[in-house]
Image (cartoon, rainbow, N blue to C red; front, top):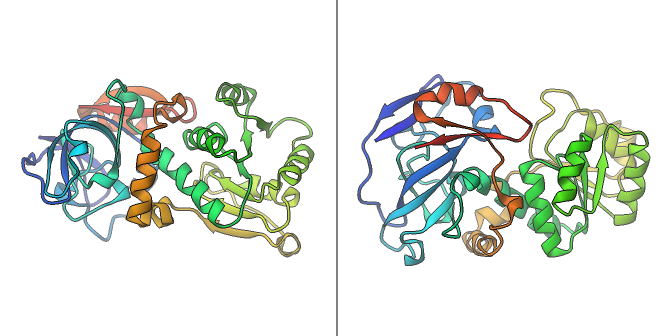
Amino acid sequence: MKAICVKPDRSLEVRDVPMPTAPPADHMLINIEACAINHGDKAFLKIPPMTAAIRAHDVWGASAVGRVVALGKDVPTAYAGKRVAIYRSLRPTPDTIGLWCERAQVHPLCCLILPEEADPIAYSGSLVNVITAYAFLEQAADEGHRAVTVTAGNSATGNALAALARKRNIPVIHLARSASARDELKQQHAEHILVTNEPGFDEEFGRLSQRLSATAVFDGIGGEMVGRLAPHLPLNSTFYFYGFLGGGVPSLISTNLFMAKNLTMKRFSNFESATVKQSKRLEAALTELHGQIASPSFQTRVGEKFAFDRIEAAMQFEAVPGAKAVLIC
């Protein structure tokens, strides 16, 4: 079968690799329909050459949609023949075959069953964003936070978090970087939206974060925004860093402010969250999300579609912020 594989120098190439025909126990085979290229794919491939090999046949790819065609022993029959959104990294195994290929092999806890009428392209990169938002809200609640600030408010993860927070009645302050981003968030029925480049932003953010007791900051940007927000946060606030859209720009906070506000800073990784690490919680999350996934808030923002043999052009693709290149089998 045709597959996009990673070489030792972390470049990609299209190869013919053996097609799996009989999944091992606790795995299933999925005929892939569409694969989104996430920001994380580009970031990880820029890391110096790997110290450990990628799994079977070096097939790359973490996000996709496809149809289940075979079940291994002990896989629930509910998956048989279903179209699923896949995030391979939720339950990696030695038998996993990556998703940028014609037929993948994964553990069922990597998959969310989609409605039959779902457009595969519209969910080709969704599950990573949805499960990240879900796992964060679970952790924030476990750690005693009652309201949240999201710095990348209209990103795919921000949109997913907005929809999930509304379901839980959790107040969210959405930070947008433009008026158009604010308008997009309004269409998603977001309530508290602030545009970071408008006059008076800092003071208004301070008033709103204090009023809502928004002590959790879900930060996908980093850089100078961290230093802008910190003076206006309530006491005992926590920054959860999950992305780096701001690139390598340092975040500056004085030690006086850090101590006076009793701030906490930590990275957020869905892989390390209780939601993903504990199988029962992950299964419950995927079941709950199945009932909500039809919301437009969870769909992938598609930029352009590419055939596998155009992988170099697909990796170079840049469009409006958040729009993803999608590989079509």
